[in-house]
Image 1 (cartoon, rainbow, N blue to C red):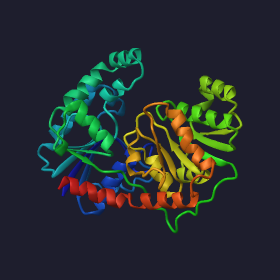
Image 2 (cartoon, rainbow, N blue to C red; image 1 turned 135 degrees about the horizontal axis):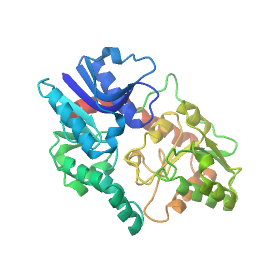
Image 3 (tube, one colour; image 1 turned 30 degrees about the vertical axis):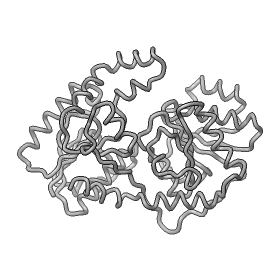
Image 4 (cartoon, helix red, strand yellow; image 1 turned 90 degrees about the horizontal axis):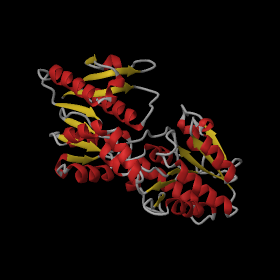
Length: 368
């Protein structure tokens, strides 16, 4: 097949998000599969540029910051339409909510959804005013016809159907993949003080304060535990520092900078917690599971769809009293209320069935 991928910033290593890793896998595996692959982007990042040399054609357009402005996004996609109209591509695959070309792979919620979940009435109104142009642009783009929209979870699929009346047959749910570790699975072994891990570069959106309140509850009950949180800006967050002192959690939590090697982080904790307020999937959960670490996941996260509560991880209700619900799930581990080795093994086996090869085959099937 002859394929075109349209991506703002493309990386072939040092991925900053699960979405970047996903597009790398698609481009790389399509090339390996013998497809003729053209890439259109604003920026190409790679330490060795190995993949770049295997592309049929690489075209640079625009600037990554242009994607902050709806009118500049439209100008970018109009150029793409002009460049691709005579290329006879079998499929043109684009990322995120943007003017439709052909096939869209959406990784995040719409701004309409963010606005509805922005908090109290004042916060919602403020968000609407601030993002009005972009919200209206997304509404226009999503109501224009895509051939197919691929999403990472039923949560995102249902959101798009509800907010934009997109027909179900236009949507395909494909859960993202994960790299299989070399050799045997990691043998689960708990730390002396059970250690919970959280990756929260965006502390509020990733549920950092919900996690903090759950830890406060555990601490007040006298539980022995530790927590490691990836949050590079922790030293600049004065409110967070105040809460740590107030809740007597300073000696319980270790804050970490950006982790270039997430495997070391996963292996240093006993359980990953994902209390995200908005999360269409959450690749961190799957990456932890392939490292034999069970996860406690928000019911708002798409990754909850691959979890059977109490068997290969836990799901906590985010609708009401979320931090209390999270704390109850965390207490199960602290009270030895579950066979840790068994649940860790089940988590690993679940992740093993969600590798990138399976994702790629599902992607190709969706195109067909």
